[in-house]
Image (cartoon, rainbow, N blue to C red; front, side):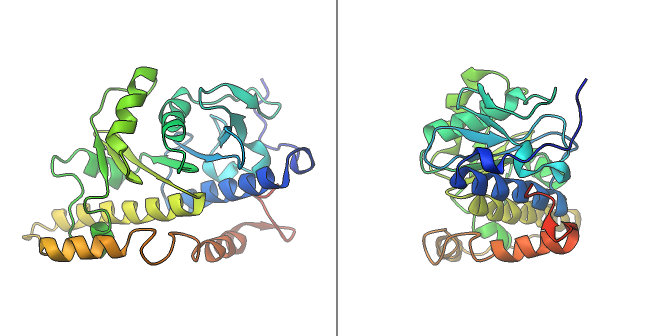
Length: 262
């Protein structure tokens, strides 16, 4: 069986736009690992190839920290593989059931991230959902959806219900399951997921303290949430992204070239 993780570069075989998308997506996978938002070989991040209906997704079997620009698989919204490296690794069905549904229904979405983090799963099990306890979580006040658990996401019939649960939002709590974010760019989707994860961690910590919790007034919640929407002041993630790439390079350079961009 061919389960090697060193793949030849495809930089000269794809368009400049696709290569940049591959580099950005691989960087996002590495950042998710760096910030502790991974679950062994599971979960997915997808990114639409600019100008096409195709999207990029990880091989099922690689750790996030192993993913490179050339190891990503190109699929269509129905999960059909358009191109993948020469390997026996395939893709996870749940990857295109969940992600494909959102990409297909939301043309404004270029990237989708799904996680099974400890804090995200914990909040997904709470009837109260994500509480607006602090500035980080308040940004999601009235801007997050909830989807009831239907079992492992392998049923294409669940697609419409997933999209309906997400609605116009960029964040979704999958009940008894985990978290999902999406965005117009992979940078935005990552920034939203980072904030959602931090909000969940803070909620679990605050509730574990056993003290009475403070929730600001509805007027403050609405104003704060509005100020933190992507279109109010500046897009999410764009300003932060160069710093995130510098962080990756500082922790994972190889002969002066980042591991993920190969």
